[in-house]
Image 1 (cartoon, rainbow, N blue to C red):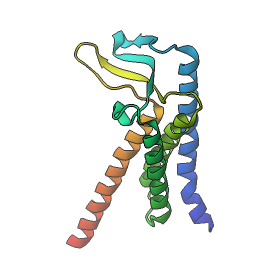
Image 2 (image 1 turned 45 degrees about the vertical axis):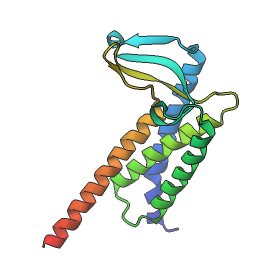
Image 3 (image 1 turned 60 degrees about the vertical axis):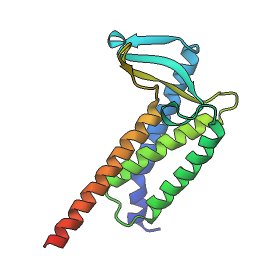
Image 4 (image 1 turned 30 degrees about the horizontal axis):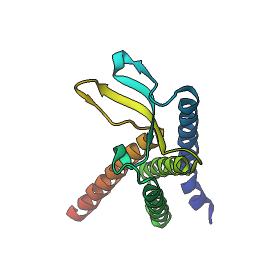
Length: 168
């Protein structure tokens, strides 16, 4: 592996390390300081911190299928890593998006592997009671969503470049 190839891995690895550390630390703090169902409200209740265990997938779908989502998460992570290694045009935005997605996936995989833990620790909730409250999430979930949005942006920008080249 040459120096340029090695450099292409530095940015996503730094993102993975930082986001994963933030995810693990915040989950630990919530589990250590909140009992199940306890909560702290901020901004008039719009932002809520409360310990919730998600035994399903994203946004709580298919509750009780923790092992299914563990296997799916590992497969998706492996596919994403393979895609990153095979991609020849690793722009900075592409590397950032892949680092965010990978760190979120790893964070939730780790959570599913903690012995005795009923599911992934979710603790952030936003919304207005009686109107709408978004399903609880965590740092890893946020990282995956932001990374996916950035990856869509990468595809859009690449397609725009391709069309501009064809139009010349």
